[in-house]
Length: 351
Image (cartoon, rainbow, N blue to C red; front, side, top):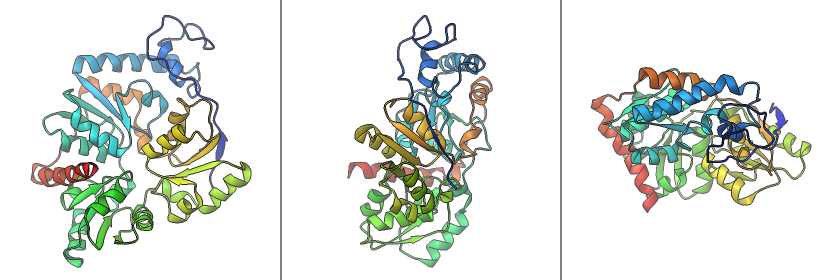
């Protein structure tokens, strides 16, 4: 059952340092300009315990020539204070190509760090916690992909970026939830294998009926928990609410929603359409991060946390920079093939 709570309005951030706490905030807080960005999500009493790590991270980034890439599911104290580039998987993949810093810290999960390394083979890529995995990445192996290719000869294989580099290397090209439809259409094929997210593939099938999409039974442990009954309960409790679902949700959940899209698409929908009241059917921190910049919108917050994303913390990001761990590497024997699959995905945007 979906648990709900009303989020408080978020305070808009100021981009310039100020010498005193902004109006309405407790006086004497450290880093008051940064606290203003997260004040509705981090209690003032907790902020002094977080500020030393934030200060250290900002200093270490300068000293180590480092940048932090953070996924949209990161907690506000990471997303709004120390991250240099934020976004969904597609945005992080694209931005990783343009990073000039020598060190990349990936505040996300392991497959994202591998993707950043594939696109920046000469740079140091760190992940603060090697245990930050992904149920989708764990649902399929390179041997599985080779078996599918043997079973369906000649059928192109589109692999979700939520997979290991070894799986990407066995694929024709990758996709994200943000560009999956465009990637499938770019192939001009009557039949496509789309792995490993079964629900994403089924939701893409609904948008591309002219292509037969073959699926694999992999699921996101966060999104597979949502049900159509959850959506109906939300609508009954909050008449007129706008429901936005991630396409990793079951098709029945997407069908009950008003809009479905990647985390970046969700953010764009909220900021452009500005619904009075909205529920985001996805990971909890998404609502926090959008609310921080949209204080006039009321968010009904779903409470399905990603345990892997939540392994990231200010403390282990600081330690990653201090100790230069944990460095992410990709086996040279498969790196070129995996990189090619990601680069083919990135090239689809220009078509």
